[in-house]
Length: 493
Image 1: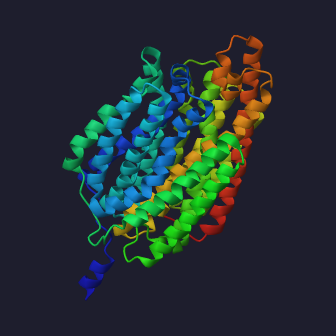
Image 2 (image 1 turned 45 degrees about the horizontal axis):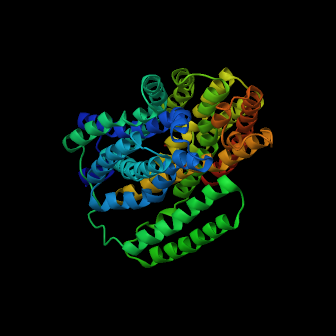
Image 3 (image 1 turned 30 degrees about the vertical axis):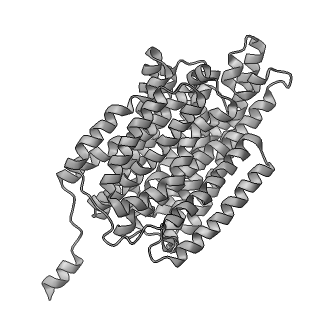
């Protein structure tokens, strides 16, 4: 009897060397995801000069990756649970490799947008697979929390090395070279994954419902388009129709999931207060962060006039802040409830938003971003851990994908919502009689010969960044309210 009871209460097996080496393999493509984003920020002025995209096309080039990832993550996560998470990881890695080649040699803005869209779909296959495999490889709660913190740190390392590598490449090569740095990373992942990573799938997945896949896409894509339209043109009938269609198909999707024995997305997960709170925290917190994070690299290059490599080096304090916060969070969360760790981090980030909103200069931008990233780190670590940990093992892929959907959609909304405010403020600061190009972007304005106009464009963009930072601070306060309302009773990790 005693031995039986001991077996029932025994701690889950701890991971060994093979699992930790496998984790290193998983972190390679994760690091590439954010490194690829960071180098694009630095490459934006160069691809703009070469491809001459319109203002709307430039926004699509920047954030279609995040939107397509968000639109397909749940589908990919569910496919991974059914077909095998390692198999999906390898398929996504191969797709990312091919799409990177297409992006590197894109002859026009339309092709680059299409390549970025394919990168988004491939990324949607990679990210939930890595998180789901982590939940399978690390069954001990403490080791899993550490592994997830390392996963978030890998995202941070990507932010750190991406701009530096991108700066070196842009100093010697054309803008498309920044997409080629992912080729060796994905090749390593493809070769080593079968040797080091376990395969895992839901033993009783049920039948995949094609109608649910279609309804999900019809629900998400109009909402994505509506946000994009709102960001680019403000309130219009077109945006209203898109939101209405998205809402209608969302309702149809939810009703169908409730009728199916094997739904594409198990809506019972949302009955868990911690799961729902984690999703909202990821969504709102990343919305607050990414609007400013997207604008600071442009400020360093366009307003401060820094070359790409120097701008990348000034972004390192922000990445260091995110790395430090990511590694500190698991230790603090063992002693303090997640809600208070998250709320405390958000209060810290408010100081960073205030620094950028109230002052200007290269040092101010770098310091403010570092404080913001440090304070936002618990959102990524604890939000992801709560989302994955709230689901049963066989649903880990879908849970990870849903959490990553909220994360990526928040990143994209940060650009769309906060970015649209920044665009409006910038255009308001440019003289009405200035050439149309000057109203499109600060990069286009700086290419014009009028020095007075160029200086006005720099001042307008500085004001735009400060306004975006103030709006992000409001989002951070709303996130803190959500955290303290929904996650207050969640126990320490």
